[in-house]
Image 1 (cartoon, helix red, strand yellow):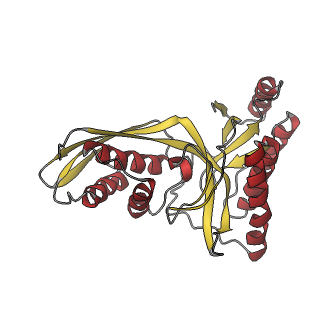
Image 2 (cartoon, rainbow, N blue to C red; image 1 turned 90 degrees about the vertical axis):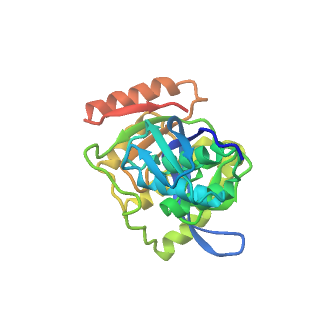
Image 3 (cartoon, rainbow, N blue to C red; image 1 turned 135 degrees about the vertical axis):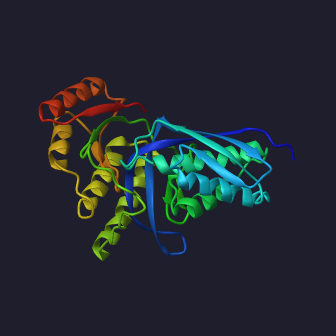
Length: 293
């Protein structure tokens, strides 16, 4: 097998459209989510293999990515070899935007690329969960996927991709970072778990019809449930500003600090409403940015 330099790339996300507990087709319950991908946020990995043991990483603190490389080499039958991994990323750290997961996924893909061995999604998910104890649905680009992030398992694959969304991003705690893995998992009540059933049905209908208004209501409901576990400062003010200017809903990073105001780009006044909402956010003391879809 010829060994050459390999490259991998993975995208970040802007939190989730929904996160909770859901049944698989056998009736078993799993924690699951649908991430809101951000294609302009990405992690790029370059792996240069060598025959001697030992993996080095730049930046040096990317320990999960280092482990992902070691596990990938082991999976490919090259557990006694090593190499150097270099990562470049523009994804904010500690905001709940998938920076660590993107690093891990890009690293895995770079190793497999270096050995000319295209991985299956199942293999990538398995290695990612072993390296980081979690993965997310950004691995799937063709369809929307309800994904068990701690197990690397698809709970449900929907027929269509997510529709385009105009999004205003608001960081509600700019001076705060959250370690996703150290963050205590939400302990949903039985009534909340029951609520995820109709939300999942509504989500399915929204995706089948590309109904962004319905998708916005689903995301808003999930964001409100999450308030019991990780409050977003002044969330109700942000939501009210969005409602005043035609936002279809809000979505949040369920284990992060960002909030997104969702707008329908197919509506004639969407671009103007986004600017009006950003003006009101600025007047109210919020810093915001536009996330391209």
